[in-house]
Image (tube, rainbow, N blue to C red):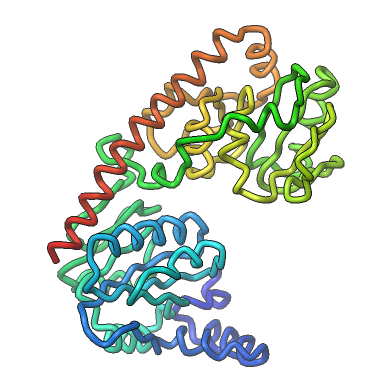
Length: 361
């Protein structure tokens, strides 16, 4: 993002423009947060500040870690800040006492200094986001800082980094704990009602590409159904949020506009292809036990996943191969699920280590 367009940066023009826009819309609380006027809930207890970014996965993982910490420690005060609000995720914090959340301060030195003074954090946890320059300098001077799933190399000293993205497999991707591992297998029967057909899932493609691939697949096998997540395809599609639970007719394209259906779909499809990889969606696809492929293996969150996620630019020939070779399909799905569980177990161990570390602060 250009500096003068960044409402969370340090550029004076950008901050003035953001303030003016918020003031016009009556969002005074956003202005207050931008300039560091933050307040923790409760009157007593050490403050642990959890910092998320704008990405949904960042906020989702931060919420899960806060819930895990709260189960272990009831005495501390927790505060979550983020750059994009996701009400459906934040509602999960409603039952967490002495826990507050809101927009993050900007990277302006005055805003950061005010936030640090008002919160006085005993410890800080940075989750799946890369702090801007002034915040990085500030974090370098803190005694207790943990970093989880940094998207870029960490340029400040900290107590520990979980999943340091150095290209090795020594630490787990914490996002694996966000996948639903126990899945109701009845979804395929519900939408098919006895019809024998294959279901396919395409994620992360452009609207044009997903439309073209779906049309080609259905022209070959008109009885199938193609699920699409990400951008809505140009081809006429059924939004799954409007689905009335009746059998879906053959040859339909179904747009997954509600992520709550992803676990069921992951277990029902024959194979999934990622035009671009979202790590949380990838882990869910692997948890479902179907065959998985991707356009770019370099986007995989862990190098070890190359053994289970096949690289291919065009998934249609691969899907035809899976249709003709059910044993191969099952082996590919089993391999993906095995690596998911391997990562999941390690991620759970490391998340508990993080919670224990916070408990000992």
